[in-house]
Image (cartoon, rainbow, N blue to C red; front, side, top):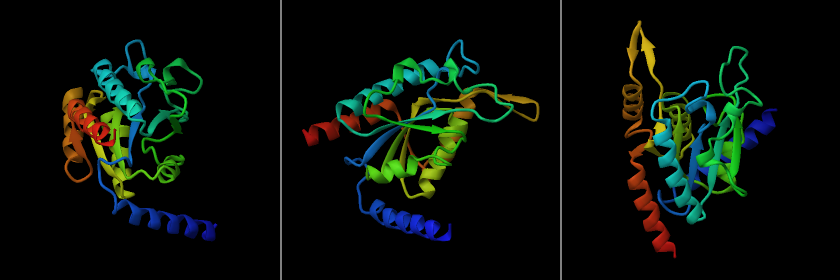
Length: 216
């Protein structure tokens, strides 16, 4: 077990050295779509405010990445906690939302924790595809988006969060409700500028389009 751990650590150190040598918006960027699943939409078990609008923005970014033939990774949450009430195994709610359904050749990562790297093959997939920059869309802003961005940063990745392609839910603290948009904005503000660059989908599409033109 120790020998295996040492091999993994050595592999990660080598990859961290690789990460420091690459540019941010080059061809080593991947799109990471987090938990855009049916339960977060109308008629789902836990519909989020503005999930429809966020999914439309995510769909536009997804199409741009498909057009430029860049890596796309879909992360699917499957709840395994005994008291879980949504994203349950083998349910319609746990399936990907129709607007962002994976197509052949796109990577699917299944997870059971907010951090998309925990007990998954996500890091291995990124290393295999020599990815150094992640463009992130998804749900929920205050949970999986936040946890995954922070973990990615700690692993040495550069992250861009597409703010209008993410959605949050209303929370409560000390018996006081916190509106969903306030939650969304607070968590995004906490990520920028250290953990991620926060951009609109229009700005991301413009940069992606510029890269397509340059590589054409």
